[in-house]
Length: 90
Image 1: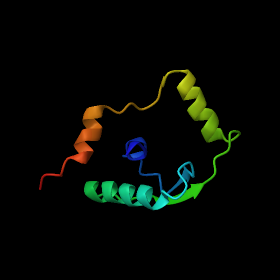
Image 2 (image 1 turned 90 degrees about the horizontal axis):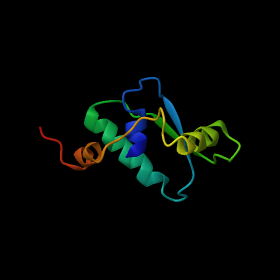
Image 3 (image 1 turned 135 degrees about the vertical axis):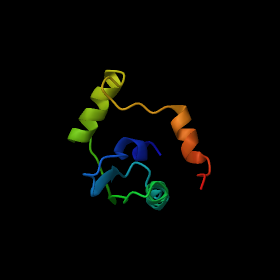
């Protein structure tokens, strides 16, 4: 779900690379994201699962954000997450 919040509203995402951190869970991640985008009426990005090494720019950015305690990083509240779990009203 946090992946959804991170890219929600970014129309430039046609393809998204996701780390293979949870091997064997790719289908669950893909299905969940597709359902969340469908719920919003937005097109879901094409997902590619890849190994992101410790020397990749993505890893360096995540580590820098962690060390800076998320300074400049999009924040998500528990209320936003719970709203996604609730059934959508017609």
